[in-house]
Length: 474
Ligand SMILES: Cc1ncc(COP(=O)(O)O)c(C=O)c1O
Image (tube, rainbow, N blue to C red; front, side, top):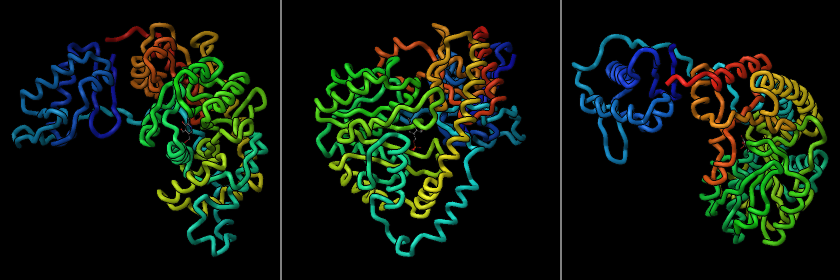
């Protein structure tokens, strides 16, 4: 059986036939050929031996030997600190024949990527209406530099929306318009650091990049375990942090909602430590079986900084979001924004305000909720069929769920085998921080179902089942 491996980027395309003898020789031959006919150019850096071994599903020792042989033959050079690079070949070694590359799709056939909404359903007609309306109606004076907090009109509209749909209680003066959650987070972290907060708790598992972002803001990030009720507030208290970043509506990536008792405990903790709660309100709009739980901001407006974004509700490319903050932080967040970007695009802000104000945004969400609900139902049925009951978690809201794998399964091997069959999926391991806690979480995959059709879900889950249950080929 031929197992083909494609690695993103221009650097590597390797097909392994696991029934055709030494895997090391196959990798070696293909790298040599790729260097000869300049698909890998002089100076290009090869992946580390560890990384390549992982991607190809072979032992690291095999790749170390391959690189050593290519080095001995003069195809690559190794420099301490900068890894292995393709050497400049003498003309005699360069091949003049066109490359004989197996045609491997570099984009997966089906992608269960986390956090992508249905890109075919982005309401482009409504968006185009809104932008043309904004262009026609925006007063000339609004075309100059905006107030650094953002368009007054949009701040009024998003806070009204947040009060109506998320049970919040912010008003326009509490809001700063930003280019999505990520930017709002950066500004909010810098601001709480200026207020003397030194340590922040991050959900574990959770997005690992948040640790980097926190560090850049000068904060120490500590992982805090998440269980079936959401973040463990007892452990947060023990961590000595005075701030926390969390996804209470639908935890990223486990999908649990923060339990009511935990919400109360969290608010009490924030008061005890005179701290701040950063609420990533991502996914809150898509709740299927019951009413969404309200935003924490409505529960404790003096402590909670709520971060909203249209990346999931409209499209990541629109790049707009908002920060709703207690008054003592608003000036700092606004100043961070003024210094780094001066402002957000005025016409887009006005367009979004019009979309929301005229009910088009709500109508789009109602439509999407039905589409995602059907996808979720198909996903649940297919997973039950292929993996048995009780394997899928976090389905009550949002567009992703956690698929628990049988004990002892290697997430990494499953992900690689699925990729070889054209299905892309993320292992839970990408989201794990703390080693001790990670050991208690079973192997799992994070399945984003926002941007896959029902048919793709059916086919993708069957492929994943094959990737999980087939005997290891190595
Ligand atoms: C946990 C989480 N929150 C929020 C977002 C939205 O971020 P942004 O608005 O910067 O696109 C994402 C994007 O994938 C995310 O993973």
